Length: 427
Image (cartoon, rainbow, N blue to C red):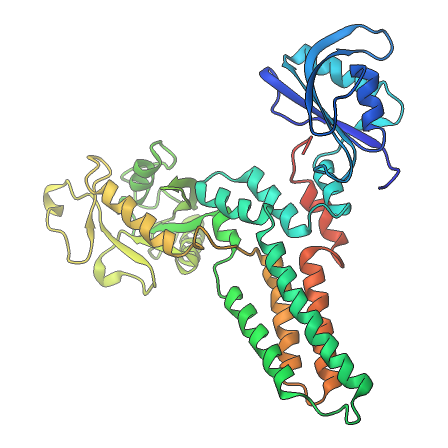
Protein backbone atom coordinates (compact mmCIF):
# COMPACT_ATOMS: atom_id res chain seq x y z
CA UNK A 1 0.00 0.00 0.00
CA UNK A 2 1.15 3.54 -0.74
CA UNK A 3 2.47 5.72 2.11
CA UNK A 4 0.49 8.69 0.81
CA UNK A 5 -1.81 10.87 2.93
CA UNK A 6 -4.70 9.44 4.85
CA UNK A 7 -7.92 11.06 3.62
CA UNK A 8 -11.31 11.70 5.16
CA UNK A 9 -14.67 13.05 4.00
CA UNK A 10 -18.39 13.07 4.60
CA UNK A 11 -19.61 10.19 2.43
CA UNK A 12 -23.36 10.55 2.91
CA UNK A 13 -25.71 13.34 1.88
CA UNK A 14 -25.37 16.87 3.15
CA UNK A 15 -26.72 17.44 6.67
CA UNK A 16 -29.13 17.77 8.31
CA UNK A 17 -29.99 14.08 8.19
CA UNK A 18 -30.82 11.27 10.58
CA UNK A 19 -27.39 9.67 10.10
CA UNK A 20 -24.18 10.94 8.50
CA UNK A 21 -21.25 8.74 7.50
CA UNK A 22 -17.68 10.01 7.65
CA UNK A 23 -15.01 7.81 6.10
CA UNK A 24 -11.26 7.74 6.74
CA UNK A 25 -8.95 5.78 4.42
CA UNK A 26 -5.20 5.30 4.44
CA UNK A 27 -2.25 4.12 6.50
CA UNK A 28 -3.21 6.23 9.53
CA UNK A 29 -6.96 5.51 9.40
CA UNK A 30 -6.95 3.08 12.34
CA UNK A 31 -4.69 5.32 14.40
CA UNK A 32 -6.99 8.26 13.74
CA UNK A 33 -10.01 6.14 14.63
CA UNK A 34 -8.49 5.17 17.99
CA UNK A 35 -7.49 8.78 18.66
CA UNK A 36 -11.10 9.92 18.32
CA UNK A 37 -13.07 6.83 19.42
CA UNK A 38 -10.69 5.45 22.05
CA UNK A 39 -10.73 1.92 20.64
CA UNK A 40 -11.88 0.22 17.46
CA UNK A 41 -14.05 -2.87 17.12
CA UNK A 42 -12.91 -6.05 15.40
CA UNK A 43 -12.62 -5.84 11.57
CA UNK A 44 -15.94 -5.59 9.73
CA UNK A 45 -17.77 -5.19 13.03
CA UNK A 46 -19.76 -2.20 14.27
CA UNK A 47 -19.68 -0.87 17.82
CA UNK A 48 -20.94 2.22 19.65
CA UNK A 49 -18.20 4.61 20.78
CA UNK A 50 -17.93 8.09 22.26
CA UNK A 51 -16.22 10.40 19.76
CA UNK A 52 -13.97 13.02 21.36
CA UNK A 53 -11.78 15.79 20.00
CA UNK A 54 -8.15 14.58 20.12
CA UNK A 55 -6.85 17.84 21.65
CA UNK A 56 -9.52 19.01 24.08
CA UNK A 57 -11.15 15.68 24.86
CA UNK A 58 -14.53 17.34 24.36
CA UNK A 59 -17.37 14.92 23.52
CA UNK A 60 -18.47 15.29 19.89
CA UNK A 61 -21.10 12.57 19.62
CA UNK A 62 -21.92 8.99 20.45
CA UNK A 63 -21.72 7.09 17.19
CA UNK A 64 -21.45 3.73 15.49
CA UNK A 65 -17.87 2.95 14.44
CA UNK A 66 -16.80 0.37 11.84
CA UNK A 67 -13.30 -0.84 11.01
CA UNK A 68 -12.02 -2.41 7.77
CA UNK A 69 -8.51 -3.78 7.32
CA UNK A 70 -6.54 -3.71 4.10
CA UNK A 71 -6.88 -5.18 1.53
CA UNK A 72 -10.48 -6.23 2.32
CA UNK A 73 -11.97 -2.76 2.07
CA UNK A 74 -13.51 -0.61 -0.64
CA UNK A 75 -10.20 1.20 -1.25
CA UNK A 76 -7.91 -1.76 -0.42
CA UNK A 77 -6.55 0.43 2.39
CA UNK A 78 -7.30 0.56 6.11
CA UNK A 79 -10.65 2.29 6.62
CA UNK A 80 -12.65 3.60 9.56
CA UNK A 81 -16.26 4.75 9.24
CA UNK A 82 -18.08 6.92 11.76
CA UNK A 83 -21.89 6.76 11.58
CA UNK A 84 -22.85 9.77 13.65
CA UNK A 85 -25.94 11.90 14.11
CA UNK A 86 -26.55 13.95 10.99
CA UNK A 87 -26.74 17.47 12.34
CA UNK A 88 -24.51 20.09 10.75
CA UNK A 89 -22.74 20.94 14.00
CA UNK A 90 -21.98 17.29 14.76
CA UNK A 91 -20.58 16.61 11.28
CA UNK A 92 -18.54 19.84 11.26
CA UNK A 93 -17.10 19.05 14.68
CA UNK A 94 -16.08 15.53 13.61
CA UNK A 95 -14.46 16.77 10.39
CA UNK A 96 -12.63 19.48 12.33
CA UNK A 97 -11.36 16.87 14.79
CA UNK A 98 -10.06 14.69 11.97
CA UNK A 99 -8.35 17.66 10.32
CA UNK A 100 -6.43 18.33 13.55
CA UNK A 101 -4.66 14.95 13.35
CA UNK A 102 -1.24 14.97 11.67
CA UNK A 103 -1.11 13.10 8.37
CA UNK A 104 -4.84 13.44 7.63
CA UNK A 105 -6.35 15.72 5.02
CA UNK A 106 -9.78 16.19 3.39
CA UNK A 107 -10.36 13.99 0.33
CA UNK A 108 -10.76 15.34 -3.17
CA UNK A 109 -13.91 14.45 -5.18
CA UNK A 110 -13.70 10.82 -6.27
CA UNK A 111 -10.47 10.17 -4.36
CA UNK A 112 -11.77 7.13 -2.48
CA UNK A 113 -12.78 5.47 -5.75
CA UNK A 114 -9.55 6.53 -7.43
CA UNK A 115 -7.59 4.81 -4.68
CA UNK A 116 -9.71 1.69 -5.17
CA UNK A 117 -8.72 1.77 -8.84
CA UNK A 118 -5.04 2.50 -8.25
CA UNK A 119 -4.84 -0.23 -5.60
CA UNK A 120 -6.35 -2.81 -7.95
CA UNK A 121 -9.63 -3.11 -6.04
CA UNK A 122 -11.62 -2.23 -9.17
CA UNK A 123 -10.72 -1.69 -12.83
CA UNK A 124 -11.54 1.27 -15.04
CA UNK A 125 -14.80 -0.22 -16.33
CA UNK A 126 -16.07 -0.66 -12.77
CA UNK A 127 -15.06 2.91 -11.91
CA UNK A 128 -16.98 4.15 -14.95
CA UNK A 129 -19.96 2.10 -13.82
CA UNK A 130 -19.85 3.68 -10.36
CA UNK A 131 -19.74 7.17 -11.90
CA UNK A 132 -22.73 6.31 -14.08
CA UNK A 133 -24.57 4.83 -11.07
CA UNK A 134 -24.18 8.06 -9.12
CA UNK A 135 -25.56 10.03 -12.08
CA UNK A 136 -28.34 7.56 -12.99
CA UNK A 137 -31.79 9.15 -13.17
CA UNK A 138 -33.85 6.36 -14.73
CA UNK A 139 -34.28 2.67 -14.01
CA UNK A 140 -32.60 1.71 -17.29
CA UNK A 141 -29.57 3.86 -16.46
CA UNK A 142 -29.38 2.38 -12.96
CA UNK A 143 -29.43 -1.23 -14.18
CA UNK A 144 -26.81 -0.64 -16.89
CA UNK A 145 -24.52 1.24 -14.50
CA UNK A 146 -24.89 -1.42 -11.82
CA UNK A 147 -23.90 -4.17 -14.26
CA UNK A 148 -20.64 -2.33 -14.94
CA UNK A 149 -20.03 -1.34 -11.32
CA UNK A 150 -20.42 -4.96 -10.19
CA UNK A 151 -17.73 -6.08 -12.64
CA UNK A 152 -19.84 -7.52 -15.46
CA UNK A 153 -17.60 -6.20 -18.24
CA UNK A 154 -14.42 -6.82 -16.25
CA UNK A 155 -15.28 -10.51 -15.88
CA UNK A 156 -16.09 -10.84 -19.58
CA UNK A 157 -12.87 -9.09 -20.61
CA UNK A 158 -10.92 -11.38 -18.27
CA UNK A 159 -12.29 -14.38 -20.18
CA UNK A 160 -11.22 -12.84 -23.49
CA UNK A 161 -7.80 -12.00 -22.10
CA UNK A 162 -7.40 -15.61 -20.98
CA UNK A 163 -8.18 -16.79 -24.49
CA UNK A 164 -5.73 -14.30 -25.96
CA UNK A 165 -2.97 -15.45 -23.64
CA UNK A 166 -3.53 -19.04 -24.70
CA UNK A 167 -3.45 -18.12 -28.39
CA UNK A 168 -0.36 -15.96 -27.89
CA UNK A 169 1.41 -18.78 -26.08
CA UNK A 170 0.69 -21.12 -28.98
CA UNK A 171 1.98 -18.58 -31.52
CA UNK A 172 5.15 -17.95 -29.52
CA UNK A 173 5.73 -21.70 -29.12
CA UNK A 174 5.55 -22.08 -32.89
CA UNK A 175 8.07 -19.26 -33.38
CA UNK A 176 10.50 -20.66 -30.78
CA UNK A 177 10.35 -24.37 -31.45
CA UNK A 178 8.93 -25.23 -34.87
CA UNK A 179 11.43 -25.72 -37.67
CA UNK A 180 9.19 -23.97 -40.14
CA UNK A 181 8.09 -21.02 -38.01
CA UNK A 182 6.65 -19.12 -40.95
CA UNK A 183 3.85 -21.62 -41.45
CA UNK A 184 0.61 -20.61 -39.76
CA UNK A 185 -1.54 -23.18 -37.97
CA UNK A 186 -5.04 -22.92 -39.57
CA UNK A 187 -6.64 -23.88 -36.24
CA UNK A 188 -4.92 -20.94 -34.55
CA UNK A 189 -6.20 -18.55 -37.18
CA UNK A 190 -9.72 -19.97 -36.91
CA UNK A 191 -9.71 -19.34 -33.17
CA UNK A 192 -8.53 -15.76 -33.74
CA UNK A 193 -11.33 -15.26 -36.25
CA UNK A 194 -13.93 -16.71 -33.88
CA UNK A 195 -12.89 -14.34 -31.11
CA UNK A 196 -12.94 -11.41 -33.52
CA UNK A 197 -16.53 -12.25 -34.53
CA UNK A 198 -17.55 -12.41 -30.88
CA UNK A 199 -16.15 -8.92 -30.29
CA UNK A 200 -17.85 -7.60 -33.44
CA UNK A 201 -21.18 -8.91 -32.13
CA UNK A 202 -20.67 -6.93 -28.92
CA UNK A 203 -19.85 -3.83 -30.93
CA UNK A 204 -23.19 -4.04 -32.73
CA UNK A 205 -25.05 -3.45 -29.46
CA UNK A 206 -26.39 0.05 -28.67
CA UNK A 207 -23.91 2.16 -26.70
CA UNK A 208 -24.39 3.49 -23.18
CA UNK A 209 -24.50 7.13 -24.34
CA UNK A 210 -28.14 6.68 -25.45
CA UNK A 211 -28.98 5.56 -21.94
CA UNK A 212 -27.08 8.47 -20.39
CA UNK A 213 -28.04 11.27 -22.78
CA UNK A 214 -31.52 10.00 -23.61
CA UNK A 215 -33.09 8.94 -26.89
CA UNK A 216 -33.47 12.13 -28.93
CA UNK A 217 -37.15 12.58 -29.83
CA UNK A 218 -37.56 15.52 -32.20
CA UNK A 219 -40.92 17.24 -32.69
CA UNK A 220 -40.96 18.75 -36.18
CA UNK A 221 -43.31 20.13 -38.81
CA UNK A 222 -44.36 23.39 -40.47
CA UNK A 223 -45.00 26.63 -38.51
CA UNK A 224 -48.15 26.77 -36.36
CA UNK A 225 -48.59 23.00 -36.46
CA UNK A 226 -48.78 22.86 -32.66
CA UNK A 227 -45.26 21.61 -31.94
CA UNK A 228 -44.58 23.87 -28.94
CA UNK A 229 -48.04 23.26 -27.50
CA UNK A 230 -47.48 19.52 -27.79
CA UNK A 231 -44.09 19.75 -26.08
CA UNK A 232 -45.61 21.76 -23.23
CA UNK A 233 -48.44 19.24 -22.86
CA UNK A 234 -46.02 16.32 -22.70
CA UNK A 235 -43.62 18.10 -20.33
CA UNK A 236 -46.49 19.22 -18.09
CA UNK A 237 -45.21 22.80 -17.96
CA UNK A 238 -44.75 25.85 -20.17
CA UNK A 239 -41.30 25.20 -21.60
CA UNK A 240 -41.88 26.69 -25.06
CA UNK A 241 -43.53 29.98 -26.06
CA UNK A 242 -46.84 29.45 -27.84
CA UNK A 243 -48.46 32.13 -30.07
CA UNK A 244 -50.49 32.27 -33.27
CA UNK A 245 -47.62 34.08 -34.99
CA UNK A 246 -45.80 31.77 -37.46
CA UNK A 247 -42.08 31.46 -36.74
CA UNK A 248 -42.32 32.06 -32.97
CA UNK A 249 -39.87 29.24 -32.24
CA UNK A 250 -36.48 30.43 -33.51
CA UNK A 251 -34.26 27.81 -31.83
CA UNK A 252 -34.72 24.30 -30.49
CA UNK A 253 -35.82 23.63 -26.91
CA UNK A 254 -34.80 20.43 -25.10
CA UNK A 255 -36.71 18.76 -22.27
CA UNK A 256 -35.11 15.69 -20.63
CA UNK A 257 -37.68 13.27 -19.25
CA UNK A 258 -38.35 9.62 -18.48
CA UNK A 259 -41.07 7.55 -20.13
CA UNK A 260 -41.63 4.27 -18.34
CA UNK A 261 -38.02 4.35 -17.13
CA UNK A 262 -36.70 5.14 -20.63
CA UNK A 263 -34.58 8.34 -20.78
CA UNK A 264 -35.81 10.68 -23.51
CA UNK A 265 -34.59 14.07 -24.71
CA UNK A 266 -37.69 15.73 -26.16
CA UNK A 267 -36.76 18.48 -28.62
CA UNK A 268 -39.00 21.22 -30.04
CA UNK A 269 -37.83 22.79 -33.30
CA UNK A 270 -38.49 25.80 -35.47
CA UNK A 271 -41.18 25.41 -38.12
CA UNK A 272 -39.81 24.11 -41.39
CA UNK A 273 -40.36 26.67 -44.15
CA UNK A 274 -38.48 29.09 -46.37
CA UNK A 275 -37.96 32.35 -44.48
CA UNK A 276 -36.47 35.74 -45.37
CA UNK A 277 -35.91 36.44 -41.67
CA UNK A 278 -32.20 35.79 -41.02
CA UNK A 279 -32.71 34.61 -37.44
CA UNK A 280 -35.63 32.34 -38.29
CA UNK A 281 -33.68 30.92 -41.23
CA UNK A 282 -30.91 29.85 -38.84
CA UNK A 283 -33.51 28.16 -36.64
CA UNK A 284 -35.00 26.36 -39.64
CA UNK A 285 -31.55 25.15 -40.70
CA UNK A 286 -30.91 23.80 -37.20
CA UNK A 287 -34.32 22.14 -37.19
CA UNK A 288 -33.53 20.37 -40.45
CA UNK A 289 -30.28 19.02 -38.98
CA UNK A 290 -32.10 17.85 -35.85
CA UNK A 291 -34.66 16.01 -37.98
CA UNK A 292 -31.84 14.13 -39.70
CA UNK A 293 -30.16 13.34 -36.37
CA UNK A 294 -33.35 12.34 -34.54
CA UNK A 295 -33.58 8.88 -33.04
CA UNK A 296 -37.37 9.18 -33.12
CA UNK A 297 -39.19 11.81 -35.20
CA UNK A 298 -42.64 13.11 -34.20
CA UNK A 299 -44.01 14.72 -37.37
CA UNK A 300 -46.84 17.26 -37.12
CA UNK A 301 -47.00 18.11 -40.82
CA UNK A 302 -49.06 16.54 -43.57
CA UNK A 303 -48.47 12.87 -44.35
CA UNK A 304 -47.43 13.80 -47.88
CA UNK A 305 -44.59 15.93 -46.48
CA UNK A 306 -43.41 13.39 -43.92
CA UNK A 307 -39.60 13.00 -44.02
CA UNK A 308 -38.07 9.65 -44.90
CA UNK A 309 -37.05 8.54 -41.41
CA UNK A 310 -36.71 5.00 -40.01
CA UNK A 311 -38.65 5.87 -36.85
CA UNK A 312 -41.28 8.49 -37.58
CA UNK A 313 -44.58 8.97 -35.78
CA UNK A 314 -47.18 10.90 -37.75
CA UNK A 315 -49.31 13.17 -35.55
CA UNK A 316 -52.56 14.84 -36.57
CA UNK A 317 -52.39 17.80 -34.19
CA UNK A 318 -55.16 20.15 -33.01
CA UNK A 319 -57.61 17.28 -33.47
CA UNK A 320 -60.17 19.06 -31.24
CA UNK A 321 -60.80 21.78 -33.86
CA UNK A 322 -63.87 21.36 -36.09
CA UNK A 323 -61.86 21.46 -39.31
CA UNK A 324 -59.39 18.86 -37.97
CA UNK A 325 -61.85 16.09 -37.05
CA UNK A 326 -60.79 13.79 -39.91
CA UNK A 327 -57.57 11.98 -39.05
CA UNK A 328 -55.36 11.01 -42.01
CA UNK A 329 -54.55 7.32 -42.22
CA UNK A 330 -51.40 6.30 -40.41
CA UNK A 331 -51.39 9.26 -37.99
CA UNK A 332 -52.38 9.72 -34.34
CA UNK A 333 -55.08 12.25 -33.52
CA UNK A 334 -53.74 14.50 -30.77
CA UNK A 335 -54.90 17.65 -29.02
CA UNK A 336 -52.53 19.46 -26.70
CA UNK A 337 -55.48 21.53 -25.44
CA UNK A 338 -57.86 18.71 -24.47
CA UNK A 339 -55.26 15.97 -23.93
CA UNK A 340 -56.78 13.78 -26.63
CA UNK A 341 -54.29 11.17 -27.83
CA UNK A 342 -51.41 12.36 -25.59
CA UNK A 343 -51.27 9.09 -23.64
CA UNK A 344 -51.29 7.03 -26.86
CA UNK A 345 -48.53 9.20 -28.33
CA UNK A 346 -46.38 8.76 -25.20
CA UNK A 347 -46.82 4.99 -25.35
CA UNK A 348 -45.76 5.03 -29.01
CA UNK A 349 -42.71 7.21 -28.28
CA UNK A 350 -41.72 4.95 -25.37
CA UNK A 351 -42.05 1.84 -27.55
CA UNK A 352 -39.92 3.30 -30.34
CA UNK A 353 -37.31 4.62 -27.89
CA UNK A 354 -37.07 1.36 -25.97
CA UNK A 355 -36.11 -0.51 -29.14
CA UNK A 356 -33.09 1.77 -29.51
CA UNK A 357 -31.77 1.02 -26.03
CA UNK A 358 -29.75 -1.97 -24.87
CA UNK A 359 -31.64 -4.83 -23.27
CA UNK A 360 -31.88 -4.29 -19.52
CA UNK A 361 -29.91 -7.41 -18.62
CA UNK A 362 -27.14 -6.74 -21.16
CA UNK A 363 -23.72 -5.29 -20.36
CA UNK A 364 -23.55 -1.92 -22.12
CA UNK A 365 -20.36 -0.42 -23.58
CA UNK A 366 -19.63 3.28 -23.64
CA UNK A 367 -17.80 4.92 -26.55
CA UNK A 368 -14.37 4.63 -24.91
CA UNK A 369 -14.83 0.95 -24.18
CA UNK A 370 -16.20 0.28 -27.67
CA UNK A 371 -13.20 2.08 -29.21
CA UNK A 372 -10.72 -0.22 -27.48
CA UNK A 373 -12.82 -3.30 -28.18
CA UNK A 374 -12.83 -2.33 -31.87
CA UNK A 375 -9.02 -2.00 -31.70
CA UNK A 376 -8.85 -5.53 -30.27
CA UNK A 377 -11.16 -6.84 -33.01
CA UNK A 378 -9.05 -5.20 -35.73
CA UNK A 379 -5.91 -6.72 -34.24
CA UNK A 380 -7.55 -10.15 -34.16
CA UNK A 381 -8.51 -9.72 -37.80
CA UNK A 382 -4.83 -9.13 -38.54
CA UNK A 383 -3.96 -12.29 -36.62
CA UNK A 384 -6.65 -14.34 -38.34
CA UNK A 385 -5.38 -13.30 -41.77
CA UNK A 386 -1.64 -13.14 -41.06
CA UNK A 387 0.57 -14.60 -43.76
CA UNK A 388 3.05 -15.96 -41.21
CA UNK A 389 3.06 -16.78 -37.52
CA UNK A 390 5.05 -13.64 -36.60
CA UNK A 391 2.22 -11.46 -37.89
CA UNK A 392 -0.28 -13.62 -36.02
CA UNK A 393 1.69 -13.15 -32.79
CA UNK A 394 1.89 -9.39 -33.35
CA UNK A 395 -1.86 -9.16 -33.92
CA UNK A 396 -2.49 -11.03 -30.69
CA UNK A 397 -0.12 -8.70 -28.83
CA UNK A 398 -1.97 -5.67 -30.15
CA UNK A 399 -5.29 -7.18 -29.06
CA UNK A 400 -3.97 -7.74 -25.55
CA UNK A 401 -2.74 -4.13 -25.41
CA UNK A 402 -6.19 -2.88 -26.48
CA UNK A 403 -7.82 -4.82 -23.65
CA UNK A 404 -5.27 -3.37 -21.21
CA UNK A 405 -6.39 0.10 -22.27
CA UNK A 406 -10.03 -0.92 -21.94
CA UNK A 407 -9.61 -2.07 -18.33
CA UNK A 408 -7.26 0.78 -17.42
CA UNK A 409 -4.11 -1.22 -16.74
CA UNK A 410 -2.22 0.77 -19.37
CA UNK A 411 -2.40 3.96 -21.42
CA UNK A 412 -5.29 5.78 -19.70
CA UNK A 413 -3.56 8.29 -17.42
CA UNK A 414 -5.05 11.27 -19.25
CA UNK A 415 -8.58 9.95 -18.62
CA UNK A 416 -8.36 9.51 -14.87
CA UNK A 417 -8.66 13.12 -13.73
CA UNK A 418 -11.72 13.66 -15.92
CA UNK A 419 -13.36 10.45 -14.76
CA UNK A 420 -12.88 10.80 -11.02
CA UNK A 421 -13.85 14.48 -11.04
CA UNK A 422 -17.37 13.23 -11.85
CA UNK A 423 -17.62 11.68 -8.38
CA UNK A 424 -19.00 13.53 -5.39
CA UNK A 425 -16.89 14.33 -2.35
CA UNK A 426 -16.50 11.27 -0.14
CA UNK A 427 -16.95 8.69 -2.92
